[in-house]
Image (cartoon, rainbow, N blue to C red; front, side):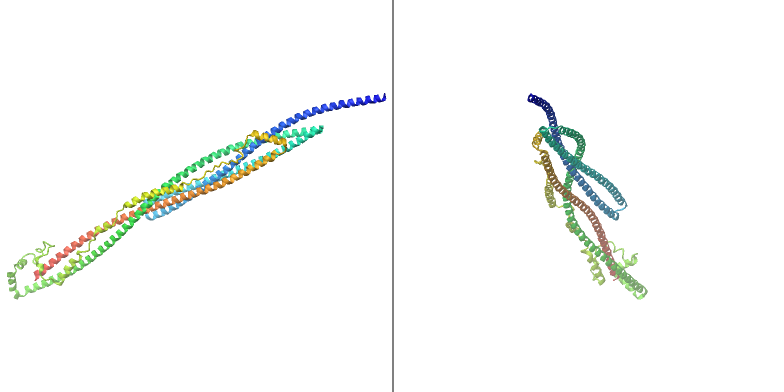
Length: 587
């Protein structure tokens, strides 16, 4: 009985314990179901976190694209720098032009009269005003470019810093979430093996803290995403503006190249004309020198003839006075002596001309012998005195070698026009020059855009595939964060290498552009030199015209002098005739 009671008691105890154990098992089953529900919720949260990780990857891609945009902005900044350098070059050219204009103004002040001087002063004043305006515009453009460049740099730096900060925050959040996920997995496994109320409470607290952290992180990420999208829109606007500027710059470069080609053609033609003008000018100078030498010789001969005539006139007048005095004295002596009265009657009988001359109002016979001054009478066959021989030599001397023949000078002086050989050879050089210039300008610059087949943002798989991979890897072990970091680091390295290559390419292109600009500047200088040579040629043509006018005036003066010499020679011949007639009458 006692043993039966004991057994019954033990059975009752066992039954109560079994009931308790069953109740505990039911409670444990309930807890397990609740834990399974929580695990399902945790898995859902994990999937949501994986989706958020995918979104984070997309955000990282957008951040990398924004980094690309930042690199483009840097390129645009470099183009702005290049434009500023172009502005500096244009300002230096304007300064050179100002110096040239000032030098020309000084030369004009020395050469030109008051009206031209005032015009040059007005031109220089307008040039100075233009240069002052250009300087002010240059300063404003430089300040504006500096401000824009500084603002772009600040924006790029801030965007890079924010992108780096957001990337680090996201990486930290992902790492924290992954660690917490691993802890939750371990704890769920421990709870499934040995479930206790304390572990459940801690798990619940951790899940609640994770949810709150996740909500905060999602809100922060949404704010960051909105700011980044707004900045991307602003950067795209800046990119469009820079593209417009680049198109304008390229159009201007094409116009400058076309102008340079046209100016080169004009320079070649001007050089050919300058050469022909120089040759013609040298020939004209040689002819002018020859004519000047002949003119000086003619003037010297005319002066010698004048001196000889003056001398001979003085000698003749002195001799005439002497002879007249002698004849008068003889006549007076004959009239005074009475013994000579018979001799005049004999002379009258012999020569009636003397009697007629005595009774005529012209006793010396000057008026009767005057009518033909240039003819030589028959009475000149008498033997000549030494004085008459000297007169004859003086009349024969200036008869030859006095008047230069202008036909020789005209035969030697070429016309101003260009010879046909040069006109034939000139188009060949014109045709050959643009071909060489087109070969020089035909160097094609490579395009900046390059397609990278290793770009992680171009040849990627679908986002669903990445989510499934991440979920499978996350269920297998703690590996997606490392893979993601490696992927991002590889993408960053690739982007850095692409950035370096783009920078090198841009430097090469800028060097080519600078060389092209230097060539354009050289061509402009050569064109200016050609224009100066054209001005010099015009001045030389003016001088040549003046020399020709002087030559014509000299020839006219020489003709007048020769006419005067001939008239003086005629007068000398008349005086000789008169003197001879007087001598004959006295004899």
